[in-house]
Image (cartoon, rainbow, N blue to C red; front, side, top):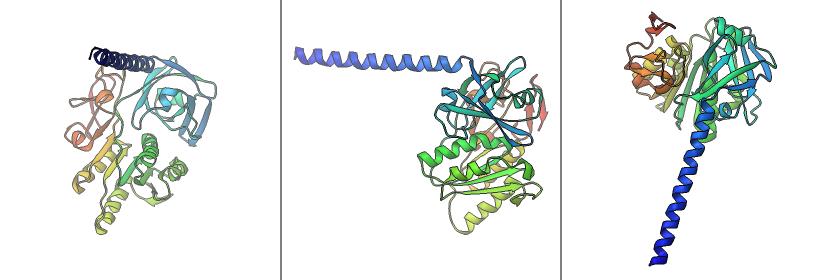
Length: 306
Protein backbone atom coordinates (compact mmCIF):
# COMPACT_ATOMS: atom_id res chain seq x y z
CA UNK A 1 0.00 0.00 0.00
CA UNK A 2 2.80 2.33 0.95
CA UNK A 3 4.64 1.55 -2.29
CA UNK A 4 1.51 2.19 -4.34
CA UNK A 5 0.96 5.55 -2.63
CA UNK A 6 4.54 6.60 -3.35
CA UNK A 7 4.13 5.61 -7.00
CA UNK A 8 0.89 7.58 -7.19
CA UNK A 9 2.55 10.65 -5.66
CA UNK A 10 5.49 10.36 -8.05
CA UNK A 11 3.08 10.20 -10.99
CA UNK A 12 1.25 13.30 -9.76
CA UNK A 13 4.56 15.13 -9.35
CA UNK A 14 5.54 14.20 -12.93
CA UNK A 15 2.18 15.43 -14.25
CA UNK A 16 2.51 18.71 -12.34
CA UNK A 17 6.06 19.20 -13.64
CA UNK A 18 4.90 18.57 -17.23
CA UNK A 19 2.05 21.07 -16.73
CA UNK A 20 4.46 23.67 -15.33
CA UNK A 21 6.83 23.15 -18.25
CA UNK A 22 3.97 23.54 -20.74
CA UNK A 23 2.87 26.77 -19.01
CA UNK A 24 6.44 28.11 -19.09
CA UNK A 25 6.72 27.33 -22.80
CA UNK A 26 3.37 29.03 -23.51
CA UNK A 27 4.42 32.11 -21.52
CA UNK A 28 7.74 32.26 -23.41
CA UNK A 29 5.86 32.01 -26.72
CA UNK A 30 3.47 34.79 -25.70
CA UNK A 31 6.35 37.01 -24.61
CA UNK A 32 8.07 36.39 -27.94
CA UNK A 33 4.81 37.09 -29.77
CA UNK A 34 4.47 40.46 -28.02
CA UNK A 35 8.09 41.42 -28.63
CA UNK A 36 8.82 43.56 -31.69
CA UNK A 37 10.69 41.34 -34.17
CA UNK A 38 12.73 42.92 -36.95
CA UNK A 39 12.32 41.06 -40.23
CA UNK A 40 13.87 41.58 -43.65
CA UNK A 41 11.71 41.83 -46.75
CA UNK A 42 13.03 39.05 -48.99
CA UNK A 43 10.83 39.64 -52.02
CA UNK A 44 8.26 42.15 -53.28
CA UNK A 45 5.57 41.03 -55.72
CA UNK A 46 3.34 43.35 -57.74
CA UNK A 47 -0.23 42.03 -57.58
CA UNK A 48 -1.90 44.98 -59.35
CA UNK A 49 -1.03 48.62 -60.18
CA UNK A 50 -1.89 49.56 -56.57
CA UNK A 51 -1.25 46.37 -54.56
CA UNK A 52 2.00 44.66 -53.58
CA UNK A 53 2.94 41.68 -51.42
CA UNK A 54 6.00 41.76 -49.16
CA UNK A 55 7.41 38.34 -48.27
CA UNK A 56 9.48 37.71 -45.13
CA UNK A 57 10.47 34.97 -42.71
CA UNK A 58 8.81 34.89 -39.29
CA UNK A 59 7.74 31.75 -37.44
CA UNK A 60 4.92 33.37 -35.46
CA UNK A 61 3.36 34.92 -38.57
CA UNK A 62 3.71 31.62 -40.42
CA UNK A 63 1.74 29.83 -37.69
CA UNK A 64 -1.02 32.47 -37.48
CA UNK A 65 -4.63 31.35 -37.76
CA UNK A 66 -6.86 32.72 -40.48
CA UNK A 67 -8.22 36.12 -39.48
CA UNK A 68 -5.49 37.07 -37.02
CA UNK A 69 -3.35 40.15 -37.63
CA UNK A 70 0.12 41.57 -37.05
CA UNK A 71 1.03 44.99 -35.75
CA UNK A 72 3.54 46.17 -38.35
CA UNK A 73 6.11 48.83 -37.53
CA UNK A 74 7.17 51.00 -40.45
CA UNK A 75 10.43 52.62 -39.30
CA UNK A 76 10.11 56.38 -38.63
CA UNK A 77 6.49 56.36 -39.82
CA UNK A 78 3.89 54.40 -37.82
CA UNK A 79 2.70 51.05 -36.55
CA UNK A 80 -0.41 49.66 -38.26
CA UNK A 81 -2.45 46.43 -38.16
CA UNK A 82 -2.16 44.12 -41.17
CA UNK A 83 -3.76 40.82 -42.11
CA UNK A 84 -1.27 37.99 -42.61
CA UNK A 85 -0.89 36.75 -46.16
CA UNK A 86 0.18 33.24 -47.13
CA UNK A 87 3.64 32.79 -48.55
CA UNK A 88 2.93 32.30 -52.28
CA UNK A 89 5.59 29.57 -52.39
CA UNK A 90 4.10 27.72 -49.40
CA UNK A 91 7.43 27.55 -47.54
CA UNK A 92 7.66 26.69 -43.86
CA UNK A 93 8.47 29.68 -41.67
CA UNK A 94 7.47 32.30 -44.25
CA UNK A 95 4.57 34.76 -44.33
CA UNK A 96 3.68 37.92 -46.21
CA UNK A 97 1.85 41.24 -46.07
CA UNK A 98 -0.33 42.49 -48.90
CA UNK A 99 -0.70 46.27 -48.95
CA UNK A 100 -2.71 48.68 -51.10
CA UNK A 101 -1.17 52.09 -51.73
CA UNK A 102 -3.55 54.52 -50.04
CA UNK A 103 -2.52 56.73 -47.10
CA UNK A 104 0.93 57.82 -45.95
CA UNK A 105 1.69 54.72 -43.87
CA UNK A 106 0.40 52.17 -46.38
CA UNK A 107 2.18 53.96 -49.24
CA UNK A 108 5.47 53.89 -47.31
CA UNK A 109 5.00 50.16 -46.72
CA UNK A 110 4.05 49.70 -50.38
CA UNK A 111 7.33 51.36 -51.40
CA UNK A 112 9.46 48.96 -49.35
CA UNK A 113 11.90 46.95 -51.43
CA UNK A 114 13.89 43.73 -51.15
CA UNK A 115 16.23 44.09 -48.18
CA UNK A 116 14.05 46.64 -46.34
CA UNK A 117 13.50 46.09 -42.62
CA UNK A 118 10.14 46.26 -40.87
CA UNK A 119 9.05 45.29 -37.36
CA UNK A 120 6.24 42.86 -36.55
CA UNK A 121 4.54 41.72 -33.38
CA UNK A 122 1.68 39.31 -32.94
CA UNK A 123 -0.28 37.53 -34.28
CA UNK A 124 -3.22 38.92 -32.34
CA UNK A 125 -6.98 38.65 -32.30
CA UNK A 126 -9.72 36.07 -32.76
CA UNK A 127 -9.56 33.89 -35.85
CA UNK A 128 -12.21 32.37 -38.08
CA UNK A 129 -13.89 29.20 -36.83
CA UNK A 130 -13.70 26.57 -39.54
CA UNK A 131 -16.84 24.87 -40.77
CA UNK A 132 -17.51 21.84 -42.95
CA UNK A 133 -20.15 21.27 -45.60
CA UNK A 134 -20.93 23.95 -48.19
CA UNK A 135 -19.19 27.21 -47.37
CA UNK A 136 -19.05 30.50 -49.24
CA UNK A 137 -16.21 33.03 -48.99
CA UNK A 138 -16.95 36.59 -50.10
CA UNK A 139 -14.04 38.98 -50.36
CA UNK A 140 -13.10 42.24 -51.98
CA UNK A 141 -9.73 43.89 -52.57
CA UNK A 142 -7.10 43.22 -49.91
CA UNK A 143 -9.91 41.74 -47.79
CA UNK A 144 -9.12 38.56 -49.72
CA UNK A 145 -5.95 38.07 -47.65
CA UNK A 146 -7.43 36.43 -44.50
CA UNK A 147 -9.89 34.47 -46.65
CA UNK A 148 -7.06 32.86 -48.62
CA UNK A 149 -5.49 31.57 -45.39
CA UNK A 150 -8.94 30.40 -44.28
CA UNK A 151 -9.46 28.65 -47.61
CA UNK A 152 -6.28 26.66 -47.08
CA UNK A 153 -7.38 25.72 -43.55
CA UNK A 154 -10.83 24.64 -44.73
CA UNK A 155 -9.47 22.42 -47.46
CA UNK A 156 -6.80 20.85 -45.25
CA UNK A 157 -8.81 20.33 -42.05
CA UNK A 158 -12.49 19.87 -42.92
CA UNK A 159 -12.67 19.07 -46.61
CA UNK A 160 -15.41 21.68 -46.98
CA UNK A 161 -16.78 22.44 -50.43
CA UNK A 162 -15.75 26.04 -50.99
CA UNK A 163 -17.24 28.66 -53.29
CA UNK A 164 -14.99 31.72 -53.33
CA UNK A 165 -16.50 34.99 -54.61
CA UNK A 166 -13.74 37.50 -55.36
CA UNK A 167 -14.73 41.09 -56.06
CA UNK A 168 -12.66 43.85 -57.67
CA UNK A 169 -13.31 47.21 -59.24
CA UNK A 170 -11.86 46.33 -62.64
CA UNK A 171 -9.68 43.83 -64.52
CA UNK A 172 -6.48 45.61 -63.45
CA UNK A 173 -7.39 45.18 -59.77
CA UNK A 174 -8.15 41.44 -59.85
CA UNK A 175 -5.68 39.77 -57.48
CA UNK A 176 -4.93 36.24 -56.26
CA UNK A 177 -7.28 34.46 -58.67
CA UNK A 178 -4.74 31.77 -59.52
CA UNK A 179 -3.84 31.18 -55.89
CA UNK A 180 -7.51 30.89 -54.92
CA UNK A 181 -8.20 28.35 -57.67
CA UNK A 182 -5.37 26.21 -56.33
CA UNK A 183 -6.63 26.44 -52.75
CA UNK A 184 -10.31 25.55 -53.24
CA UNK A 185 -9.48 22.10 -54.61
CA UNK A 186 -11.16 20.14 -57.38
CA UNK A 187 -14.60 20.32 -55.70
CA UNK A 188 -14.43 24.07 -55.14
CA UNK A 189 -15.38 27.02 -57.30
CA UNK A 190 -13.93 30.50 -57.76
CA UNK A 191 -16.20 33.26 -59.06
CA UNK A 192 -14.51 36.53 -60.05
CA UNK A 193 -16.60 39.66 -60.50
CA UNK A 194 -15.76 43.26 -61.31
CA UNK A 195 -17.79 46.41 -60.74
CA UNK A 196 -17.41 47.52 -64.38
CA UNK A 197 -17.70 44.07 -65.96
CA UNK A 198 -14.22 44.26 -67.52
CA UNK A 199 -13.37 40.78 -66.18
CA UNK A 200 -15.46 37.88 -64.91
CA UNK A 201 -19.06 38.56 -63.99
CA UNK A 202 -20.32 42.13 -63.87
CA UNK A 203 -21.58 43.30 -60.49
CA UNK A 204 -20.70 43.59 -56.83
CA UNK A 205 -19.67 40.56 -54.78
CA UNK A 206 -22.88 40.88 -52.75
CA UNK A 207 -24.94 40.69 -55.97
CA UNK A 208 -23.16 37.49 -56.96
CA UNK A 209 -23.79 36.05 -53.49
CA UNK A 210 -27.52 36.79 -53.82
CA UNK A 211 -27.70 34.88 -57.12
CA UNK A 212 -25.70 32.00 -55.65
CA UNK A 213 -27.95 31.67 -52.60
CA UNK A 214 -31.04 31.69 -54.82
CA UNK A 215 -29.49 28.90 -56.87
CA UNK A 216 -28.82 26.84 -53.74
CA UNK A 217 -32.40 27.46 -52.59
CA UNK A 218 -33.85 26.35 -55.95
CA UNK A 219 -31.87 23.09 -55.71
CA UNK A 220 -32.90 22.68 -52.06
CA UNK A 221 -29.27 22.60 -50.99
CA UNK A 222 -27.92 24.16 -47.82
CA UNK A 223 -25.10 26.65 -47.32
CA UNK A 224 -23.53 25.91 -43.93
CA UNK A 225 -21.41 29.04 -43.44
CA UNK A 226 -20.57 32.35 -45.10
CA UNK A 227 -17.25 34.08 -44.42
CA UNK A 228 -16.53 37.64 -45.54
CA UNK A 229 -13.85 40.30 -45.45
CA UNK A 230 -13.54 43.51 -47.43
CA UNK A 231 -15.15 46.95 -47.63
CA UNK A 232 -17.59 47.48 -44.77
CA UNK A 233 -20.51 48.35 -47.07
CA UNK A 234 -20.03 45.01 -48.83
CA UNK A 235 -19.80 43.06 -45.57
CA UNK A 236 -22.93 44.78 -44.24
CA UNK A 237 -24.89 43.55 -47.26
CA UNK A 238 -23.40 40.05 -47.00
CA UNK A 239 -24.23 39.67 -43.30
CA UNK A 240 -27.75 41.03 -43.77
CA UNK A 241 -28.24 38.54 -46.59
CA UNK A 242 -26.94 35.67 -44.47
CA UNK A 243 -29.40 36.64 -41.74
CA UNK A 244 -32.25 36.79 -44.27
CA UNK A 245 -31.46 33.29 -45.56
CA UNK A 246 -30.89 31.85 -42.09
CA UNK A 247 -27.21 31.07 -42.69
CA UNK A 248 -24.46 31.43 -40.09
CA UNK A 249 -21.78 33.93 -41.03
CA UNK A 250 -18.48 35.34 -39.78
CA UNK A 251 -16.68 38.52 -40.81
CA UNK A 252 -13.22 39.94 -40.28
CA UNK A 253 -13.63 43.62 -39.38
CA UNK A 254 -11.32 46.60 -39.65
CA UNK A 255 -10.89 49.59 -37.35
CA UNK A 256 -7.98 51.87 -36.46
CA UNK A 257 -5.74 49.98 -34.03
CA UNK A 258 -2.90 51.48 -32.04
CA UNK A 259 -1.91 48.86 -29.46
CA UNK A 260 -3.35 45.57 -30.73
CA UNK A 261 -3.71 44.17 -27.21
CA UNK A 262 -6.88 45.78 -25.85
CA UNK A 263 -5.37 48.70 -23.91
CA UNK A 264 -6.12 51.86 -25.88
CA UNK A 265 -9.70 51.15 -27.10
CA UNK A 266 -9.08 53.01 -30.36
CA UNK A 267 -10.60 50.06 -32.23
CA UNK A 268 -13.86 50.03 -30.27
CA UNK A 269 -17.12 49.29 -32.06
CA UNK A 270 -20.04 49.60 -29.69
CA UNK A 271 -19.15 47.51 -26.63
CA UNK A 272 -16.49 45.51 -28.50
CA UNK A 273 -12.73 46.05 -28.65
CA UNK A 274 -11.90 44.57 -32.03
CA UNK A 275 -8.26 43.72 -31.37
CA UNK A 276 -9.43 41.42 -28.55
CA UNK A 277 -13.08 40.58 -29.30
CA UNK A 278 -12.32 40.43 -33.03
CA UNK A 279 -11.29 41.11 -35.67
CA UNK A 280 -13.37 38.04 -36.56
CA UNK A 281 -16.89 38.08 -35.13
CA UNK A 282 -20.16 36.32 -35.76
CA UNK A 283 -22.88 37.95 -37.86
CA UNK A 284 -25.20 37.89 -34.85
CA UNK A 285 -22.85 39.96 -32.70
CA UNK A 286 -21.90 42.32 -35.52
CA UNK A 287 -25.45 43.09 -36.63
CA UNK A 288 -26.46 43.75 -33.01
CA UNK A 289 -23.99 46.66 -33.01
CA UNK A 290 -25.57 49.90 -34.27
CA UNK A 291 -22.22 51.32 -35.42
CA UNK A 292 -21.42 48.60 -37.96
CA UNK A 293 -21.97 49.71 -41.54
CA UNK A 294 -22.84 53.24 -40.38
CA UNK A 295 -19.94 54.73 -38.39
CA UNK A 296 -16.19 54.32 -37.97
CA UNK A 297 -13.83 56.22 -35.69
CA UNK A 298 -10.89 58.34 -36.80
CA UNK A 299 -7.55 58.41 -34.98
CA UNK A 300 -8.89 60.89 -32.44
CA UNK A 301 -11.90 58.66 -31.67
CA UNK A 302 -14.52 60.80 -33.42
CA UNK A 303 -17.38 58.97 -35.10
CA UNK A 304 -17.51 59.37 -38.87
CA UNK A 305 -20.09 58.06 -41.29
CA UNK A 306 -18.93 55.14 -43.45
